[in-house]
Amino acid sequence: MATSIGSGLGGFAAVAQQPTYGATFVTPTRTLMFKSAKTTYDPHIVQGGPYLQGGHTVDFGTAHIQTWLDASGTLMGDVCNSSHALLFATSLASTATLTALGTTTAYELGGASGASMGVADTNGSYIDMQLGVPTSDGVQRPENYHSCVITKAEWVFDRSGIVTYSYDFNAQYVEKTTTLITPTYTTAPVPFAMNTTSSVFKAGTYGSEAAIDGVKKVTFTLERPMATERIYLGNQYKDAPVTNALVKLGMAMEVDYTTAAKTGLFDIFLAGTSLSVVATAVGAAIGSSGYNNTFGLNMTNAFVQTGGESPLDGPDIVHNTINWTGTVDAANDPALKGTLITADTSF
Image 1 (tube, rainbow, N blue to C red):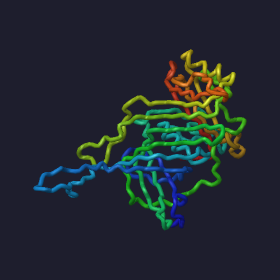
Image 2 (cartoon, rainbow, N blue to C red; image 1 turned 90 degrees about the horizontal axis):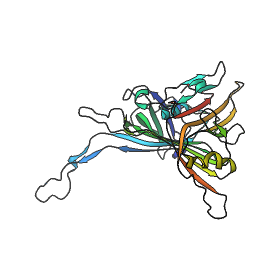
Image 3 (cartoon, rainbow, N blue to C red; image 1 turned 180 degrees about the horizontal axis):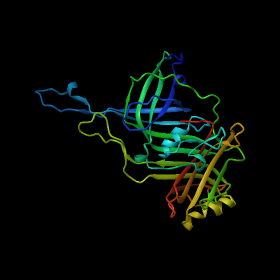
Image 4 (spheres, helix red, strand yellow; image 1 turned 45 degrees about the vertical axis):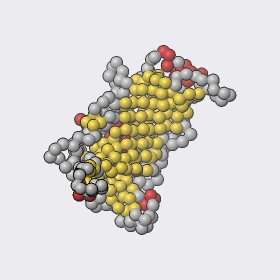
């Protein structure tokens, strides 16, 4: 497929849900809104020798062996009102699907109850992905990443910017022979931002959070440690990754020392109590559905780890970056919940 643009402007990324790790590549149907897709191939090369042969001082090329191939990378972009649901659900390892809200044209991931972080090992949280990468003559060349898992996710809610995402993925393998799709591009995408009166930052007891001012930026992170190199004798490709350590949830908040922030956030450090934290970006109405495009995260039981001090550092407004870690509360509520309301009807 010729784009006539021999740069990143001519590229695309598209994904599809893969129900079974290692199964036949699923033709991608959802073209992503993204800014970069930086990937790395790992052919796991070993070199035989060194062999001692009467004065030979350079390794033999015939002993250069590719043992097996996998790939990894990072997708980065703005969270938009379309084309984000599959990536978001996969990052949460959630089985949630886009469900109509009543008889309206608005769909929510997981329906009215939203989506909660799940267990990647049991929820089949895999995607197949194709990149269309143009050579300098403007011809798109396919790169196909099979059975990808998302090992780390980051979402940034910035009052002065746009809500962004970053997803680290690991693929079973990569190949360049599967035919390039004809992508269907999203029209008139709108990125989420925190510039509407309905967009909120709240913190407090889970289920009873209240607005707190002074917060300029919140970065949520979800890191899922996994054994990603399970290659066994008799297999050409590796087996599905397995979670091999506790999932790490974190937040970093850039906060000014306002009266509300002092009581609601800074004082939590010495008290050692937990808070439920909610950041929600609300966009335009979805037709006449009565619902708005919405993207939000809720870390339900978080503790301050560092940055709870209020340093007098020159004449500037007193401020700090407060770092939190997410845990599971005594009621066993989901540690991380997500909200995505969109006009998209499917992944």
